[in-house]
Image 1 (cartoon, helix red, strand yellow):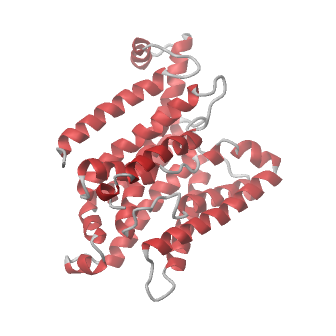
Image 2 (image 1 turned 180 degrees about the vertical axis):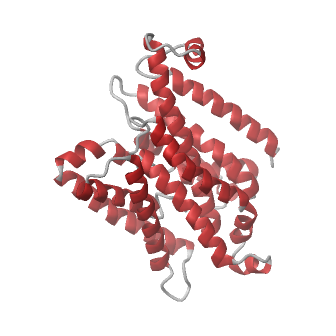
Image 3 (image 1 turned 90 degrees about the horizontal axis):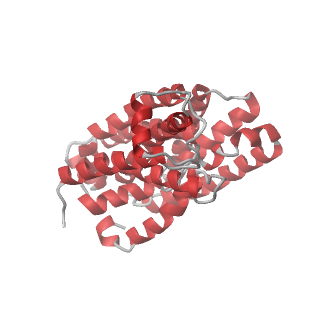
Amino acid sequence: MRRSTPLVLTGALLVLGLTCLLSLMVGARTVSPSTVVEALRAYDDSLTDHVVVHSRLLRTLAGIAVGGALAVAGAAMQGMTRNPLADPGILGINAGATTAVVLGVYLADASRVVELMGLALLGAALGTVAVYAVASLGREGATPVKLALTGAALTAGLGSVVNALVMIDDSSLDRLRFWQVGTLGARSLADISGVAALMAVGAVVILLTTGVLNALALGDDAAVGLGVKVGRARALLGTAVILLCGAAVALAGPIGFLGLVVPHAARLLLGGDYRRIVPLCLLGGPVLLLLADTAGRVIAPPAEVQVGVMTALVGVPVFIVLIRSRRQVGL
């Protein structure tokens, strides 16, 4: 049964608001909703609870930015490749960005978010080109299965390189221990605003081309028949995906499953029209990421489980439930 799009988007917006409040309240020191409101309206750095809320505020903002970016990128990749398994983590984009960042830290001592962002964008672009070029070899071209297999192989190979580099250099291991598995902590407002502009450009491009995504999802011949210049459309959408994934990896490290699970959940709720799926992903991605991050703060006290680990733990059972409804999600 198709649900009303405005009703679903309104509900998702309310859930996102509640999730943000939960993210500000819950952690090693739990604070009340009234304290959160007071800290946001009249911050007093002499009050410990206010300091706690403000430190979590940066983490929440990072979660909103990264969650929205990865979910929208995943939806765009699934539409433009006609591949229900397309995800920045599975198709090698996150692996390319991660490898470039680790190489930059190991060889050039890169540390500023601007440096990491440049490296991540370069690595994401190279990973995308490599996967598409290898998958395109052969008479049948870049089929969904070949893209998934090539991306998985590249991800495994680059993952070994990253682990080797981190393990042979103690300073790199210290700096990248949490980033490597995905984390929302230890970022400043300047870091978040620095990558948010790129994420906004990528998201706007995809939001404005959802009609093109609908055409590409029908196949290249149908898209050409509808007047879409397929090569130009894929280049534009691919650039937007690289901006979103590169910026997200630079800010929070490689976080998997989000770009795979959220678009399928949106498709289950609203059908296969990307004009509805992409806006819902923009809201649903932050919800899932912030819930995973909040759960990671309380699941093993006093330590925290990083959000990249929690996303996989939450994402796997959710995805299994979704593929049980394979007809609705198109798998």
